[in-house]
Length: 283
Length: 305
Image (cartoon, rainbow over all chains, first blue to last red; front, side):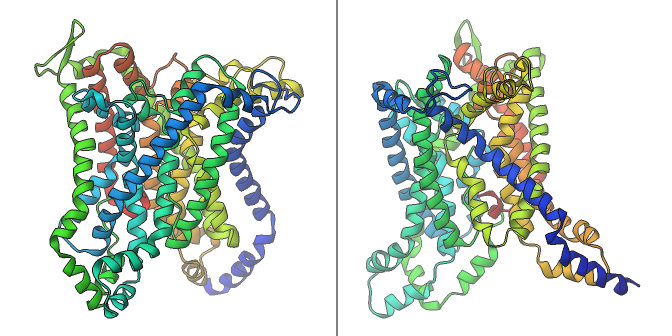
């Protein structure tokens, strides 16, 4: 009996994609993607509207808010300090994460799970708690509060991405290439610089782009350990206390274009390298 | 989180003996050298600070100074202080609602990307994640623009004539907070679900149907049970992120009904009561660790990062 009913069922299933289910599915998917992107579009829309508060109706097109934002010395200073902090974080996370990932991916040793636990556990701790506990630590060396403190905090937050992206890349590394190089008489440093490094360059770039983006936009941890330093997210947070201004929309538009472009490139790289899923940001 | 990707490692271990001898010649000290920086870093800047937090929570603020004698005062205070207890309960409630809504919204999307999207798959996956690499604070700000009394939704509906006067409760309410949190954490639910749905082979479904199952039955008896790990991992992470978030409740929820994260910041910044704030943070951590411990058997590392 079962085998008799099976046939029409499967032909039905094959015919279904053209039907109403498909239309419904597409509509649903479009709605959720709209939900993802409408907030971003709204920020950008108000950045170009002539009204002095970000509200409807939109008025004449203007780039005035971009000029005002870029003329605001404090805002631009915070933009630069965020950029420096993010650059330093990207370098630190790569320099510390890559050697660790090489050992984790290539060398068998006992207690690997513990090391992984130690590296990954910052993911599950609310960022605010990470910030607060670092603040407690820096109480014993207050001179670290500020730029250095933020770089330390951001490196701690981003090391887990860095290690995991390198780890998945290095697991799939064809080690016959190392073998070939050694057969041809290459020394160990030469194998590293002429085989391993060039082949992991895409992963290095992806890690640097992602950790840069993550650090650049991070607010809450930086806020706790910033001292008198002001990063761009801190500057935005402070100005939100004094009401909404299209200037924020203008600077936000600039940042979003840069970070979306950078992370999209990085994600394409990662997907091509690992054939897996894209790397997730931390909230 | 403890299980390492063993198949890939086995494959790696089987790799040619020559390459392996290269690795071995690196010597034990080299693997120590590779791991030492990260281990030291994590201990100094992650483990020690958390230990400090735990220690602080057992001290007490007396006359604006920290009294360094062991006490359970802060913990007892949390469970007798109505305001703090309410904040804790509201946080849990909001996080549960956010997690459930995210699960319902995420499943069809993950299913679509994994099974129906065809060549659009990579693009759709990247489109899920890319907006979330933009600054968290900007995404929260965007919802402030959308939900405010003179915001996009209210003034849009007023202009269209659907509203006579703006809906004032859109912003500064637990509802606004929940919307913001759903927006922020939906991708964290979609990705693990995608991974587990992606693993369900079409041939298994075909087999089920050959054996007489309707597509509906094949879904509920083949696809869905195999998605349980993804559902659990997504739920755990959405919940953890939602329960501990500060920026969104502060920007969208306003100050009327506090969430736990806002209460922690108030203790630290306004009251300067660091031991009290530390105890609240510890309660939050214990809740998170309990949830993780209860669900650990479903969580594999590849789903986390």
